[in-house]
Structures are given as structure tokens and as C-alpha cells.
Image 1 (cartoon, one colour):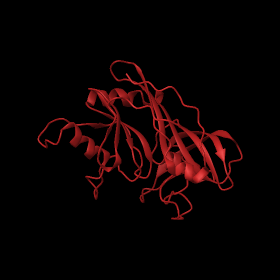
Image 2 (cartoon, one colour; image 1 turned 90 degrees about the horizontal axis):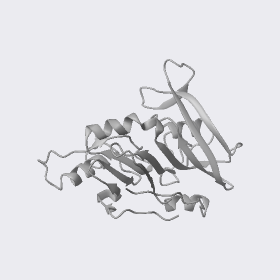
Image 3 (cartoon, helix red, strand yellow; image 1 turned 180 degrees about the vertical axis):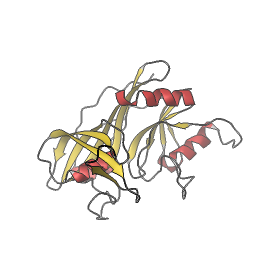
Length: 242
């Protein structure tokens, strides 16, 4: 699969790549191992820090800033959207249910059903572990749709549609379904033989917050995935840059 790049594609520190930029939004390809936003113990090795420095052009006193629209887990890779104003942020978040988000995941084992939707109420405990609960008042209703693209002796390659955006949702749903994502040290089998989490935000399609134009972006499949399951032949979707 080839990446369709816009003329503004730029490579930034820590492996972060800008796929698209205009006066209102930034669309980036985040590598695994990079936080979306800082934590109590890590402030600088984040996509937010790198992009803030980028829009300020290295001038710390600049008032320019970016705004978080959504997040990816540190261990995940793929497409992230940032806004350049609060208005753009709220516009994008308000239409988030209509935003199409596709992921690729390599999981352990072979699934009985080649497609389906996993539904449960998700909540989080004090140890920050997300899990499904039967208490509908305690958890948030969550839906994860999947389709099997390829199977090998040990693994299955899935295309996943994130229908709701809960923390760790894909990882928890697949693990609780008996097929944890390869390399998932938190919800998976605990083996450390795989160097990274096999979860990648492949594509996203949304309406521009102000022009209303439909924008669709897709990244190439990480080599790590082909190392796990061999050649991956997925039809290229139309990619639009406006």
C-alpha cells in the first residue's frame, strides 16, 4: 500500500510526521512509543509538545498553540488530529460520532466469526485498568466493529472500526473476546517477545470544521505488521487532500 502524501508532508522529531496542515488543523502520523499529551512524569516526549514547538517556530514566548481533539495510546501508531483553535477543536469533537476511524490490529489466535461487533459497558478501576462491567450506570456503552482480513497459524489481522471512543477500548474488547492484540503488555498475554503493540490508526475521514469539505487520510501499514502476518493486500481507498 502506498501513502498518498500532501505537499505539506513534514518530518519532525521523534518520528512524528505531518500529513496535512492548514490554518485550522494539523493531521499527523504518530509513531509507537510517543505520548499524545504529557503525563506527570513525561512532558516533552509527546506529540503535543513537538507540535506546539513546531507552530511556535521555536519561539517559546509565542502565543500560538494547538488543541487536543482525540488521543492514541502511547504504544499505538497512526493518525492523530490536532486543532489550532478552540473553535476548531469543539467543531471536530462535536462531529466525532460521525467521524470514520479505521484501525489495523494483529491479534493472537483465529476468530470464529470473520466479522462482528463487540459491545459492552466499559469502566476503569483505581489502577487505571479498563474493563467491561454489567453495571450500566458505572460503565459507558462501547462498540467495536471488526473484520478479519487475514489469518495465519498464530495470528489474525483485523480491520477495526472504532464506533465509540473510550480509553483502551479496542485493546480491552479484543482481549476480553479471547484474542488480545500482539504486544499488549497491559491487557494481553504478558509476553515481552514482541517489540510493540500491533495496533495502528490506519485512516480517518471527517468534515473540515469550517469549510465542511470531507477530508480523508490514510497512512501506510507499518512493516512490523507484515513481519507478523506476511504480505498485506488491502485495497487502497481514495485519499483526498483539500
